[in-house]
Image (cartoon, rainbow, N blue to C red):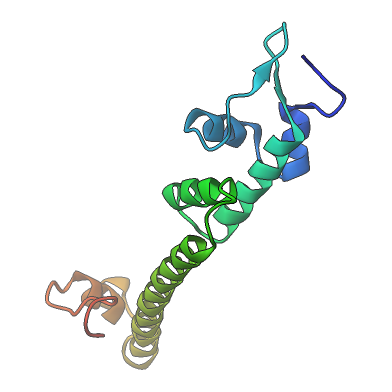
Length: 150
């Protein structure tokens, strides 16, 4: 059952820079196939599992969701399909990243304005009278990340 190419979960974790609990989790949710077990119950993994785990880890580094990774793993194992589906998935993810960046830029502008307002109007005064506290407790303020800015 065991060969010289088999990896223990600890070795697999070290080789892929994933934690042991993460490997178990990916196995539990079906991103990694269930490991073979030695008679003592220890998990063993093949080189193909190492490749798949590296692929999953890289997908996570790029912020793909578990479901997106599931689809990419399926595409990687489907030589009969062309890469259009992978491109479309990456394109959708890129659009989402751009949307989040837009929100983060709006948040940055709002926070920058908070700091500038505080520097100009109340720096050194009592914290309860700070314009930042005032703005954060005013319910009618425009959301930092919504349609408008402060």
